Amino acid sequence: MPKNIANPDQTIRHDWQLEQVESLYALPFADLMFRAQTLHRANFDPNVVQVSTLLSIKTGGCAEDCGYCPQSAHHESAVKATPLMPLERVLENATKAKESGASRFCMGAAWRNLKDRDLERIAAMVSGVKDLGLETCVTLGMLEGHQATRLKEAGLDYYNHNLDTSPEFYGDVISTRTYQDRLDTLDHVRDANINVCSGGIVGMGENPEDRAGLLMALANLPAHPQSVPINLLVQVEGTPMAEMETLDPLDFVRTIAVARLMMPKSMVRLSAGREHMSDELQAMTFLAGANSIFYGEKLLTTDNPDTAHDQKLFARLGINILQDSDAGEHASAA
Ligand code: SAM
Ligand code: DTB
Ligand code: SF4
Image (cartoon, rainbow, N blue to C red; front, top):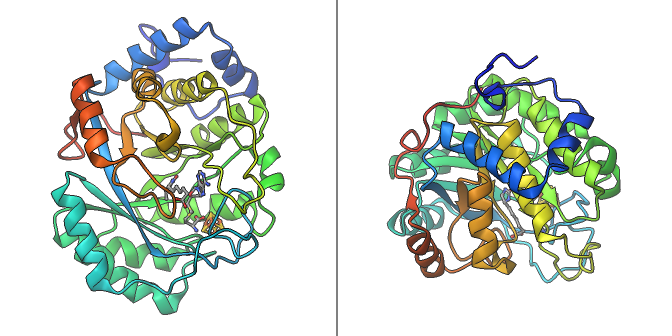
């Protein structure tokens, strides 16, 4: 039972049932937006958005078969495989990201899992980026406990590892690793006291109950992820999902609003897919409770809006970029 009588939405819950999530999705749009906005304002400054810049430090040639991903060696996309980027180039990119206003730098590798032979090179990247005064984030595939401990020691603030979709739809998207593998990695990250960044992708041909199932799996984790990226599928030529039917944008907004309602104190990140969204649709997601974005002209291999365009959009909306992680939050996730 909700404990907070004044505003039941404030209660941090880990016992969501599918019907309850579906009933949030089924609310009249205005009611859903009002509830999400009310809760958002109770926990965050609604005019502040956190921005992270992404860098692909090891691109393509990935052994996994994720159906959406242009970096999988199983698909015929135009992405060329590269070796791990040298430390100096990573730091050059991080310096530019900081100059353009990012507060967090997220390094991604197209790996199934982090190998011990690469651990020290990654640890050096994390320390180097941290020394520039940026928050650090990496996404490197599956991670073991001792690796998480080492990365924490190097200064890692966030580890991104997505559940991607509902447990039921997952097997239609990926066959080379299990849902449980992903949950195990999240346990290792949490146990090492690294902030968890975990979300998923919508628009992959899933059913509405799979979108509800993804949010339920995230909210019912032992702790809500501190950051919840909601990606809209980027349909990339050569991947099995290249011709996927586009998701109704209002269902995308509903997903953001329901994520906000279920994980009231988490940062909800409007992630991949912004390149093809109108300014008005993005504005609606901020009203629904999104309060973080990927910022910079590239995601990992696909395009993201120009920083100048994002800056103009923020100015039109009166949105300020979060300078320091604690400033925009009234409280942190639990
Ligand atoms: N290889 C690591 C892994 O899978 O954990 C890290 C990088 S992987 C590219 C990070 C996330 O990017 C995936 O979990 C997925 O959610 C997202 N992603 C990849 N391709 C995408 C696409 N075409 N559209 C939307 N999101 C995508
Ligand atoms: C996340 O949830 N989305 C980002 C980040 N975490 C690593 C990645 C989006 C990738 C989109 C496809 C690409 O650019 O390759
Ligand atoms: Fe590899 Fe990650 Fe792409 Fe899956 S999402 S194919 S693990 S890079």
